[in-house]
Image 1 (cartoon, rainbow, N blue to C red):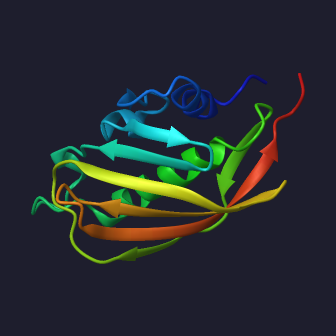
Image 2 (cartoon, rainbow, N blue to C red):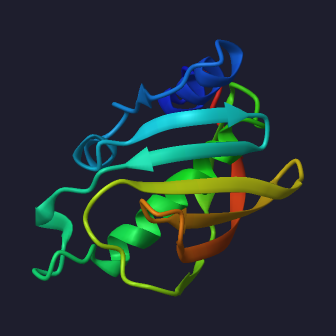
Length: 149
């Protein structure tokens, strides 16, 4: 099996010091207009512009989407530290909501707290356009070796 496409894009952003790199690896990333704004080993900043169809009808982004954006951030930070022959799976996630996230530019910053061979602990924060903290999350992430071809 080949390298996971999300690991490849994170490594590219780090190695080439790219900013505003569109993430086209899956349909939800595309729908969220996901972009890697900055990345280094064990840390990423990701931008999103969620469309109206992901709101609750009052221009507030639905909570599950907020959780997904935080998860993307933690997984992308974790992909910066795993070998090319591995993939990742979030084991569980605790999300805390502090304020409603209105439509517009949202930013997630995610970092790794501990990196092991089989488990990574990560945390992420979601900020609104005015840099106010809207939500945070933490998660253990399993490192899964890919089957050899």
